[in-house]
Length: 345
Image (cartoon, rainbow, N blue to C red; front, side):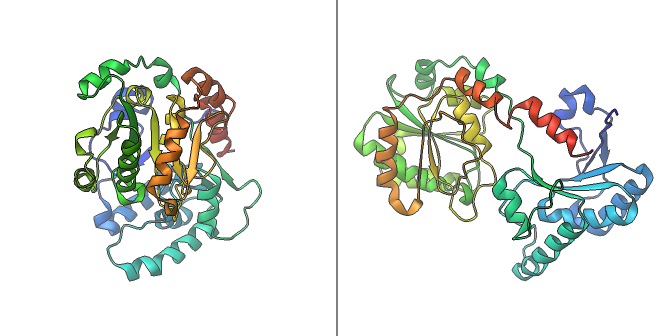
């Protein structure tokens, strides 16, 4: 049976994926209202569900799926899927009492009304279920499909990359790639870097990404006396190439709540990097043969630095080797597509 997909979006402009993908053109159902006008937004969603008479509705709002799920259940007879992408369980309300009141209510709406609940990892799914046993065939993990092509196609020039950043040709680069926000803990990455540099003056750091802690990262690096060896690169579109030019990838995620699924961890392995991970990163994104160390944040930046330098003695898989390992995992693109289509059966 052919599958015809449409996308209900709250964007009034054509997105980048729509521009680049002919399949998506004309398939976006644009809502005229934002979440700030909840009444109008939900009324329009009700009308869309009733008018289109979908066979399945796939909702990607984590706990905030609840109001859309309730409306979909009332308005049509579609199969309803709640897809959970995040284990943080954040809610877009300023009021703490409102979050405390609505979090358990929204969870129960999802648990009771959804035909299927899908998590991006075992940890994410079990966190959302909050102790309820998985329903066989209904509550399940669906991993993202990861495309290794950009990493296989990357032609890294380590010397040129270092020259562009004003670094010595033999510099060893510790890479932090992701949002510079508290839940990614970039300040701890600065502290680890400072300890590494005490032990090996060739070590430098690169931060790819931006966020609320960007200035704090710069200030902490200067405070620790390593600001001149730290490069803040902002958002970049050539992350596979940058990763391929570095030596370590660090993700010191706070241990509670844990990371839902570290896509950047998978990408770092595809780039051939050594991994420094906190205990806030589960096993799911680790491929066989990868070179990594997982430490507790309480063990301190000094121990992290020692472990990082020990990893230099280990050779990580090449992008070709990592890609072959990926092809045997649930992250394989073809496997992930087939598994996704099975959700609608």
